[in-house]
Length: 182
Image (cartoon, rainbow, N blue to C red):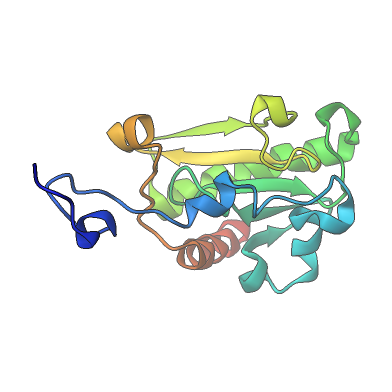
């Protein structure tokens, strides 16, 4: 019986072509999640107080903003968040609901023009049991999809390969958003 060497265990490519994604450990372990449900610990409440490039905000509206998802399902995955710290869809105002809807449609148009997806997944996870990573602050997911973008990795390896850095995607989408406004 052959014993595995340290190199075999430490991420050196072998016949299995493993894709190592240690950055996901922060999300899985909860390190990137707020310590409490308070607005003071909420990354969606903190983001608007930072520069767009630092916070990965793509667009700022009057009542809501568009931000890159730090743990994207696909390249270009954005979130539409109200500025107000509110968790439940039934608790947002009519004006917030309209703007979130308008920004969702605009995000789809911008992504179509800048990344040419063939479809989208849209949705809100209401509560931790429904899959919300940050349940205390409502956010609408806009996930661009392409034929063949899902493969064995998410199913077998619980890993998603995203071929674009968040900062690059934010810059591309922010530029396309400006074009959309013209």
